Length: 128
Image (cartoon, rainbow, N blue to C red):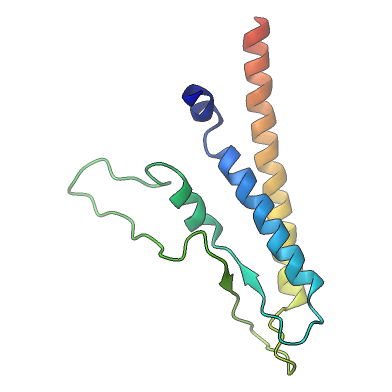
């Protein structure tokens, strides 16, 4: 089982995290007109690094400087608006749509990588 997890690499974790982020961003977009709604997001890189054993960047020697750990990794954070609305809503529709679109493209990329990995395993099982 561990060999399969190593074969998939970070793509299975990335796909799950991208799906969660899509839900958060869609919620922000849906509440763009809700007074006092605060836009939220998750730090994708920090959360993915925390989810992986050894992180994305690990040191190979005790003398190397370790990457500082993000204390907010995995937790929802509030987005700071560039132009806050008068009703207290911090959702900036253009920003949220851009983030959502970028996240969807990256989700599809992770899905493509996983599909190729599965296809490679299937070919190996069939002996092709």
